[in-house]
Length: 247
Image (cartoon, rainbow, N blue to C red; front, top):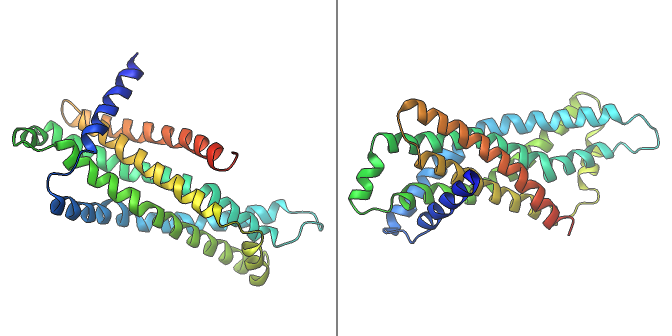
């Protein structure tokens, strides 16, 4: 029953969150602010992880190919499939759940315990809409572009590992990337990313919004936001993969 209580409470919060913004100009301005703070601020860690992730995939694939019957372009093909279908959309989203989710929850939670949200409510402002909707909109719009950049950087990292490590030639690696390419797989990955972005922002916003107490409770809400966002991302990944690929 405790689970259903939180599901219902979350649903009611989302109804308030997705109400019509009271001031569109202020909403648009806040969306751009959140894009810079939440999404573009994560470019550095995304770039570093993506490059090394691609490099490790290439090295591990080459290590496991010990048969002369398997063509070397399989290295590039395997790196592309792994990065596009799973590693970039899911792994990067899990990392963003830790970085972005904790920030959202702690920010809104601090506003709750310092009674800033109560002040907004007294002034007649829909605080859920004002605080959470710009964050949801910003991440849903920008995160697919971050994941697309992550895919590109991952393939670059794989190319560097292949060429510098003498795993295979540049021509064969690029041939593997181009082989058996299905554009729908990119669409599938970006659709997953948009769902994951919604989960991260809405769940983190929920935990921050209903924080009560002091600094310790803000930290606890931040931890719960990351944990539940990560669990829901994994579950959503299974459901979306079944619907979009296995159907």
